[in-house]
Image (cartoon, rainbow, N blue to C red; front, side):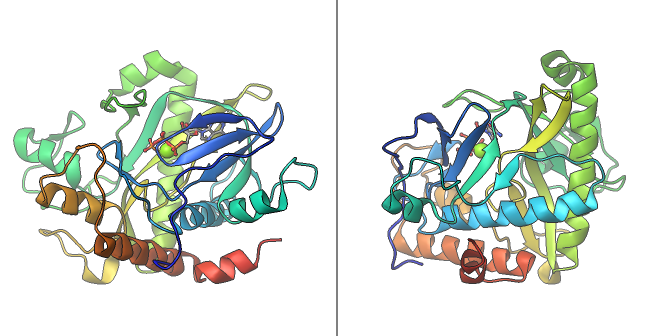
Length: 312
Ligand code: ATP
Ligand code: MG
């Protein structure tokens, strides 16, 4: 993968760009659908790095697609935004654009996204561990004394929502009451219920494949026609989750991870955390690409090439 070039920006001649996120570019297909397209950009600590990770957008897209297929079987009543992995023949795309998008785009329902990040944590690490060691709480919820780093929460996974901050600002933790005030009582309850159900189904599935989903972030949107809460965005990718190797996990220390933690650790140890225009060294790019590919293969049972070959 390191031999290929990272695709860090995308423009299509005949489809309007709706938005540019840290990783994705969204293009309008029509009034009700969009092309949800992952570039190879990588962000850490809310800052996009100067260079990308070749092939990362392909992995994020294919891993999300795999999860949508798994989750619609495992979580009764779950609705999601994926329509197709190939743009329709009627879409005004040149052959070159189709080739560029192949494997990294999803035709998705165009919906109004709820402005909260639905985070579920099964294991205590990262900011949750910092809060616990300082105050004995996680997301303000008192936890029993004596928990070890990276241990599972004793009473099961916990839901710790945050705001979805505008570009350049930091997401802030919010209480369940604040979530209610942002999205309303009915939708806040449904988002929480679905988040925990999806996490539990996914964590069990991943564990059978040797992966611990330590924590993850979901986004949901409203289908205004049916009043249903729909799972959108990327799902259970190494960008949105912490994935650990179950075989090497042990409470009390950080397990080897297949996700962005490696990049975060590199930035922190090099004094580059949060700095703009940071260029990752080739070795860090290659190692990140290898981790993303590895977890893709473990979770899906396929190589990236096999997944791409199965596309129409
Ligand atoms: P991060 O993922 O790090 O929070 P980001 O929010 O900038 O960064 P990207 O993944 O680059 O994320 O961009 C994807 C954007 O698309 C997000 O703003 C997300 O809310 C939005 N989105 C996801 N699914 C849909 C959908 N079905 N309809 C409309 N917008 C969507
Ligand atoms: Mg995102």
